[in-house]
Length: 150
Image (cartoon, rainbow, N blue to C red; front, side, top):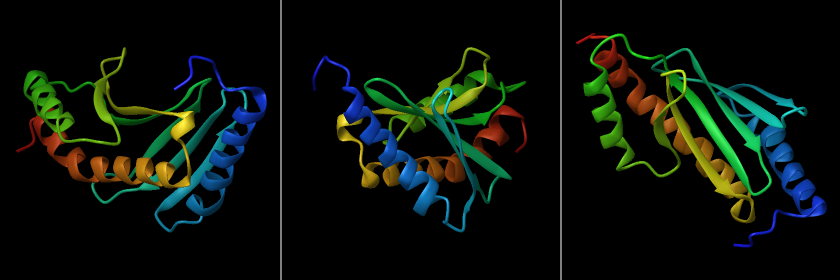
């Protein structure tokens, strides 16, 4: 890994790779509801349908050295916070694509990042698949714990 940020041409190539993949083949997947891009940030939004909740959106932010990604998982729970946080931290021990995090607002997110030098189509697919699996697998149990629904 270099300490230097990517030059403009290399960063443009990464940007184009992410754009082509997310706005192309990913956008055409049956489970994907929409893919949008905000050039001011730059950020891609990939909204996908879920079985355990209506939908979830992955935010992909392109930085100088990394692609950061996150999914809003659930609001700050009104009860059983310690039990929920313990549960999510134990899930972090097994996760690969992302980890659970408490945001500055107290809400729960799935977050991760990958170095741009390691980013390719296969890695993007792995990230998307990993986030999809984590939302599908852990959203309902987290709701039951954090909102006292047994």
